[in-house]
Image 1 (cartoon, rainbow, N blue to C red):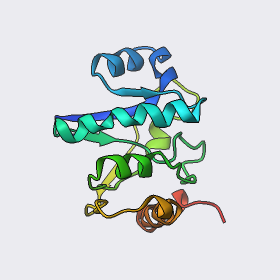
Image 2 (cartoon, rainbow, N blue to C red):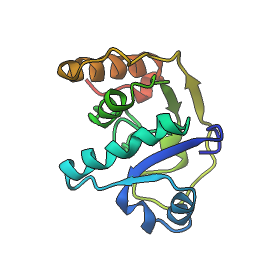
Image 3 (cartoon, one colour):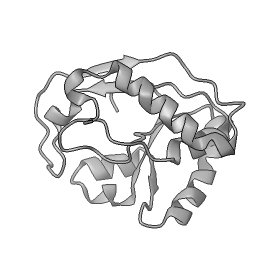
Image 4 (cartoon, rainbow, N blue to C red):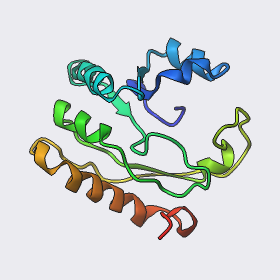
Length: 156
């Protein structure tokens, strides 16, 4: 979150509030939390994202919906496409490499590790159509694969 500009909010699972210190900071920063156990409620809560356009905010979302144990890219969830369809705002892919070494899944300990952040050119979504959702997911996922180191590309 330190690498994101002012006016940026994040989305995380509702349970993030139980992470010591990080959860409290997340709530105090007014980041969004969604209930992933109830897909209908999660999609409904995303409707509040019109506030992004109205308040000129940026949203950081991790399209995998979770962290992988190995650091390899996982399949993308549909949430980021739902957001793009509702807000019609561009997507700026931010490819992170090495984060799995700094903060391992199921651990509260953060370790020093080299992390690379690549910002890719914005992708316009103002003409996206709901019936092409899977095509958009595959397109963005492929873009990430192209820019990740070999050790973090999905397993065959």
